[in-house]
Amino acid sequence: MKEKIIVAIFALMLLINGGVPAVSHASGNYSEWCTEADAYIGTVGQTISIPKSVVYYLLDQGYSLGDVITAGYLAENTEPVKPAAVLESEKNDQINQAVGDITKVLEMKKNTNKWDDVAKTLNIAPENFKQDIEKTKQLLSKEPRFL
Image 1 (tube, one colour):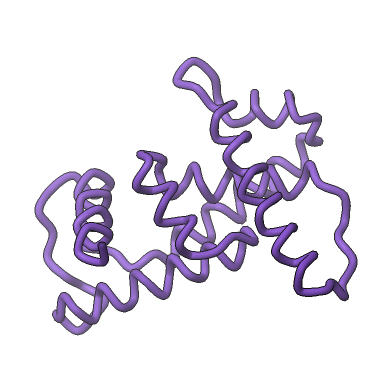
Image 2 (cartoon, rainbow, N blue to C red):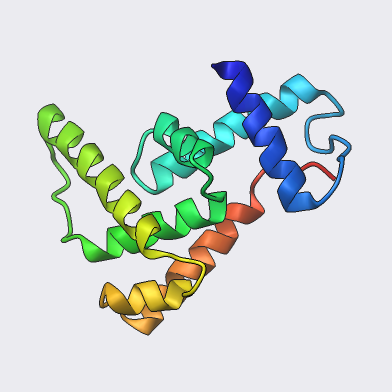
């Protein structure tokens, strides 16, 4: 399973960067890059409140990392503010809810519309949407890259 995930990440990076890359970040060591990429996916999951395994699953389903992040931010904007102290069982319920919300938002995004159309459908204020897009860009800029 881990090998499939690594291959999927590598294929995604090839699609994003448009060619066979040379490793840059990880001191020229592919296994170090894989470790960095895995940690980065974990950071993405924490940022949008879903487990790392779900981020991998969504990537495996064909969604781009940018789309997963954007959907995560939009889903957060459609939910009421959560209390700071949450019991463990409630936390699991919230994770399941977040995963469901992100999936619903991803399904709203089609080739025939744009993310701002999805934000309008979700009644997200334009200024909040712009902030979400900026946060997405910032998070994507930290992605370990092949050059």
